Length: 482
Length: 104
Image (cartoon, rainbow over all chains, first blue to last red; front, side, top):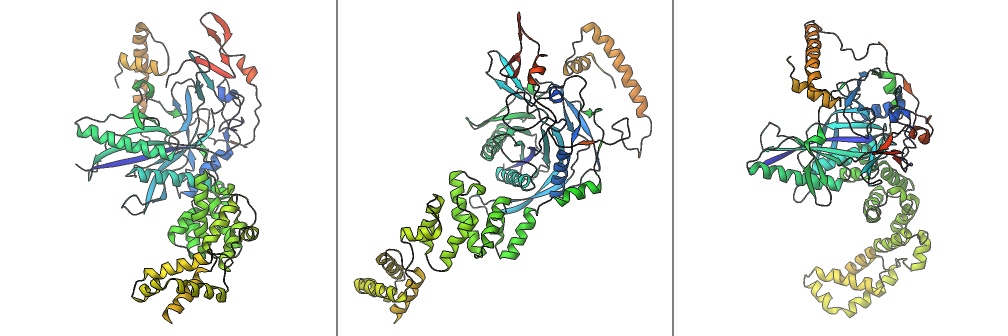
């Protein structure tokens, strides 16, 4: 039987605020344990939550960015459960009336094997505000667990999708797109190591063509795209094998073990899914007016989709290039800055997505940490277009610049990379090559096209790589056809 | 809706309240009474009425995103309970609050 996997995501994004969602305690990462755990974080008797305006504005901004309905009135609810890192015995969240309603995100699913790349719309069910829990630290004291409540009360926006994704590739494409978007609109720092962006993935399988959803299992707390792919692929295989062996899938929460690459169900005791939600009497309904939305909209940057469309028109880039250059605001800015120094947009796009991206990838750096500034890159590209250096030589200059060996012109001079564009000098070289390679010339005249390239190679070699390849081509063609 | 003793035990467990067998029977009677009242209320026609989530007809006030809390850890940790098992020492170490081991 052919199976289809159905995937939905719930993503916890930590909102970019100075303070907690319900108190004025700092949320700065990495502080000494419990130094940012105020009386509200500790749930001391008599304390009351007071909602952070910035957290609300982040939620509105997200809603506007995905064209979602923003609830004019939303309600905070208590989600009740006991765990040592949750001193109140409940998490303040939103249940029946979330702040952000239905919206949509367009994703680009990359080509995998023989399947071509494609675009797809993933529908967002809702997004709601809630507080994070504290952290349990194990092993500090024998037989005990340590509790650090610095993180307790950190503002989160939980973003929930419809079960719209049909492969690990689609799920990861969505997660990456969302990750880019929340950073683009500056509501989340996107730091996955520090837990600012964590995904829960719901996976179920069903016979292909069936309309009915299978029983889902939820993979908790994935904080890397690589693990997400591995976890979904393992979970999908496991569910299909279980069903094919005549077993049944039980709804469960599972954890992914990166060491084994496997998922395993948490014990049922660990997931008493009986949260007894009810409206929190400590908080009044959150009312958002048209004026509130308008105020947030003023600070909304041009969104990636709009920028992509503009790049295609303004710079004549392909959809593929425009997509690649708008994966982050910093990358887009770098590209625009490079072209602003008066270089060809297509050439700039190729270098930004080619050499620059490859280097950044290899060294796991962000574009803002590139040792080559947009201005320096532009200078290098100008030296290619004014024929001072060949494309190959430019690659060497680029390497040297990346290693901070100096400015473009100084490197060209120091390495002797200036190309020979004097046609007289090139003609001399070519005449020598033709004389020394009579056999190749005969082959070419007998119709062997490859011989031409070999002759170009010889001429380049004779010029120690410095001859302008375009001129070599032209002159050689002329001489051979004479 | 008919409640059972098992429901009482389950709700008590979820709320971490210890209810003895004898108390459970009395609690069952009382809770069944309360559910009866709710059933009566559900007979009222509420078509077109916006559900109320708070008894006051006001909206939430918002706070500016500025740090107002200072580090009072040492003060707060004076409230930590004793370690137990005969030790009078407080259940804190290296700034952490200590609790019985939680196993993932």
